[in-house]
Structures are given as C-alpha cells and as structure tokens.
Image (cartoon, rainbow, N blue to C red):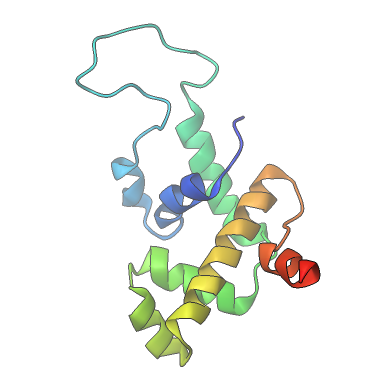
Length: 127
C-alpha cells in the first residue's frame, strides 16, 4: 500500500460523508484518459478502493480533536470556505487553517501508522 500524504488525504476526505463523491475521484495511479494504452502495474492498479476504505476507517479511529473534526467536516463534507467556517466557530481564518492543517496531518500520520509531529511545536522549540 502506498503512503498517505496531505494531498491524497484532502483528495479522499469528501468520500467520508458523500458515497457518491467516490465516482468523481480519479485513481492517482491511472494514466490520463487521452493517453495511449500501455502496461499497468498490477500492484498499484487497484489502490483507489483501498484508499476509500482506509479514509473512512481513519476518520473514525484517528486521534483528532473535536475542533479539528468540525473544521474538516465543514471544509470537506460541506465544502465551506475558511471565512464561513471561522464565522461559524467564532475564530479567525488563521485558526481554521491551523485546525485543518493539523487535522489533515494527524489523519495522514494515522493512516501511515506513524506518530504525528506538529511542525509548529518544532518551530517553538527551535526559537
């Protein structure tokens, strides 16, 4: 199974709440539709459904705080902008971006079976 990065987690998150979103998710390992037929790597050809199952299970089991879960839901489940989420949560846009960044990072780390390291903590310790 390939590793999960932030881009892939963000790509898959809408499918947690909308099962039909999976129809619009393209397999990142598949060739472009307008490309000529070529060989297919059988080991990575069927990972999309595994990714969808992982992201749904990861949402339930990842160690996310309530505010991170709410921010992720409003962004990827409801497709709200930072400004709207911030108004709903009575915080700044920056606070929402931080919650989203941490939530996505925690979810990716959880799916990879690693510990999440908060880069902001590292910056504070370095200063």
